[in-house]
Amino acid sequence: MSAETTGRTARDRAVAALADLPNEPGVPKPDPILVADNVVRRFGGLTAVDVKHVEIQRGSITALIGPNGAGKTTFFNLLTGFDVPDEGTWTFNGKSLSGVPAHKVARSGMVRTFQLTKALSKLKVIDNMRLGATGQKGEGFWRALVPGVWRQQEAEITARAEDLLTRFKLIAKKDDFAGSLSGGQRKLLEMARALMVQPEMVMLDEPMAGVNPALTQSLLGHVKQLREDGMTVLFVEHDMDMVHDISDWIIVMGQGGVIAEGTPDKVMADPRVIDAYLGAHHDGAVKSVGGEEIDAGTLDEGDSVTLVPAVDELDDEDGKDRK
Ligand SMILES: Nc1ncnc2c1ncn2[C@@H]1O[C@H](COP(=O)(O)OP(=O)(O)OP(=O)(O)O)[C@@H](O)[C@H]1O
Image (cartoon, rainbow, N blue to C red; front, side, top):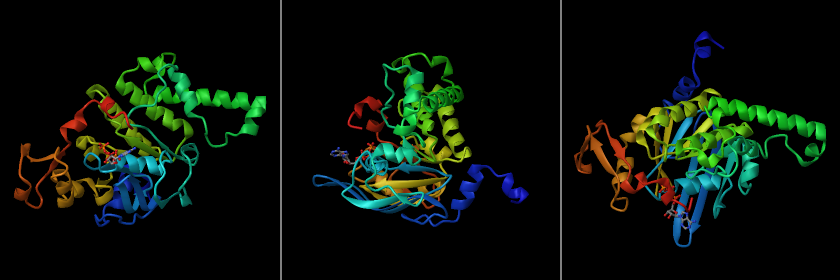
């Protein structure tokens, strides 16, 4: 390894690996950890997801964005085994995950968090963490029957939980009920708990929703740290500042399909993306240039564009109880 290579951060490597790719939907990546093909999910007459081909670069932070109802959460649910597609295949680290249930997906190294946090409010923070270790690699029924092995594993799990709680600045709360934490702290707990399985890939569904500004930087820092620790991150988010700040690559969904992909600067200036946010049937998003709302037709190539999510996306996340 050259001196130049060793001095580079994971971010530098991710940026370099993706810099020269064409920003086209489905573009192959140099080292994909996740590859999905022809994934379709219908709800009655509605096609919620119809992704022809998508690849996620290993070691990168990739954002999945798109207007309300574009299919982002449904696609997440499919990839992680929380929902079953009508059609389609996908591989993680070269192994097929089609039809694999959620707990086995997690065991294979791909974990997710939810828009609405799943922390069990009547359990202590530390017990939520311990529960997060369920299904970790190497855990097995027969192993668990051997008391010595079981005790040693318990001790390891507790030590790991405490390390993570320290890192996420929740250690002082370890004996509090999860229900007493603030929304932002619950998001931190959810992320910390996901790491209990020592995943290779972490999928975060709206990590910023419901987080107050005081915890925003801390959460951003933790997401960036996942990449520095060698993990791959895929996240759904409406907060475009966050998306622009931390993403190496952005995938844009619209009406179930991938409509654009690329580096943050390219994607945010891509007319297909602006159209998707401005389209008549996605009436909530507006575009602003230099802080001023403008009409789609007046956009010049190279204009700096801010995509502002629809107002209803800014509502409290509790409104989205189907997720
Ligand atoms: N269980 C379900 N039953 C019926 N329709 C559903 C179900 N889940 C999702 N849908 C529909 O599928 C489409 C895609 O929804 P999805 O929640 O995946 O979009 P999204 O991009 O995550 O949106 P948001 O940004 O609002 O979270 C929407 O039209 C939604 O109403």
